[in-house]
Length: 188
Image (tube, rainbow, N blue to C red; front, side, top):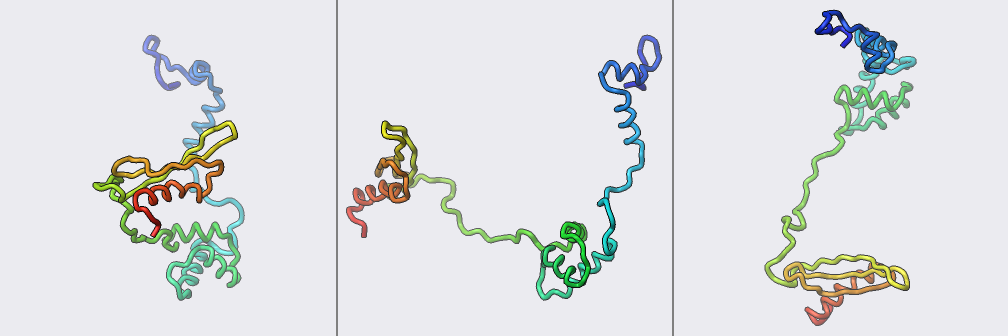
């Protein structure tokens, strides 16, 4: 904006006027200009290099991986083998170099999934094929009570209902027991 010229006078606005209008210190603008114009070296880790350069360390990593009888060693095991060989470096450096050079172990192998429990439709053509259960809590004079219910997915009929002070797994199964007793007469 400071390089723009005023349409009425034809003169540049200048950095002092622009900073005053925007409410920004001139030092901040000069700092950002200098940073933008400076040649920045590529980012790298600060501090000492370590026992060897990145290229030499990658060769040591390749040696460890080729000597291993397994396929796809992780960076921790490679780091441990390097320490055993007398090459002391950080785990993060080993991990970074293995990632950059494509030496990392496969992280998530493709898993074959079985068939889904249902095809996205939970209603059925006939009753007594699929039942569902749910529970909620209600406040009573004596405290909270857990209410469990079982529903038929075809008819939306209440199969069983049970309320108890404690909502244990045994209490949650009671509506199903009621439904089995009413619809099938026994627990065979």
